[in-house]
Length: 172
Picture 1 (spheres, rainbow, N blue to C red):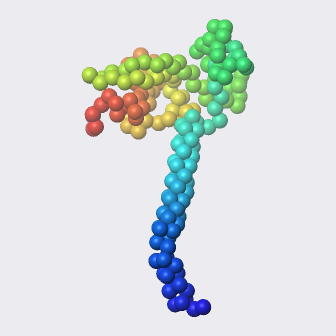
Picture 2 (cartoon, helix red, strand yellow):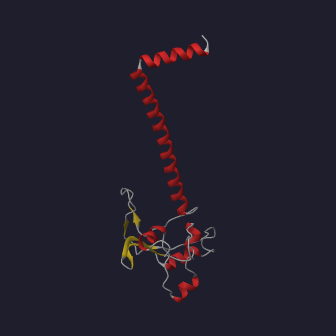
Picture 3 (cartoon, helix red, strand yellow):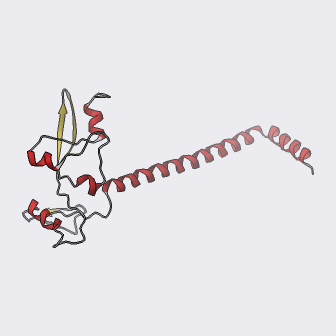
C-alpha cells in the first residue's frame, strides 16, 4: 500500500463514519486542552509557592512567646509574659549567639487603614530596620525607614502593593 492509497482509504473511512470521526476529533481536542490547562495551572501554583517562600527570606527561625500545645494544629500560646525588646537585643548579641545574622522583632496586628475616603483591612507590623534584609522585602518605590527615623520618632510607614492599590489612585 502506498501513501496515495492510504490517504484515499482514510478519507473514505472518515466520510463513511462522520459522527464517529467528529467524536474522535472532539475527544482528542478536549484531551489536549485538558493536559495543557493542567500543566499551566501546575506551573502557576509552583510560581506562587516559590514566591511565597522567597518572600519569607532565607534561613529564618521564628520565635513566639508562650507554650505550644502539640495537640493543637495552630501555635496556641498559653502563659508566659511574652518576648520583649531586651530578648531581641540578647539574641542579636554576637557573643551570646555568634551564628545569628540578624534579629527582627515584630509586633503584628490586624487593622483598618485609611487615606482620604478610601479604607482597607490589612496587618500592621511594628519592626526595625533589619526587616528588609532578613525578610528579603524591599519597597518598589521609596525607601524603608532608617535608624534615624526610629531615633527621632518620625511618623513613617512602609505599605505593600495591595494597600497602595486599594488606597491611592494610579500615579499618586
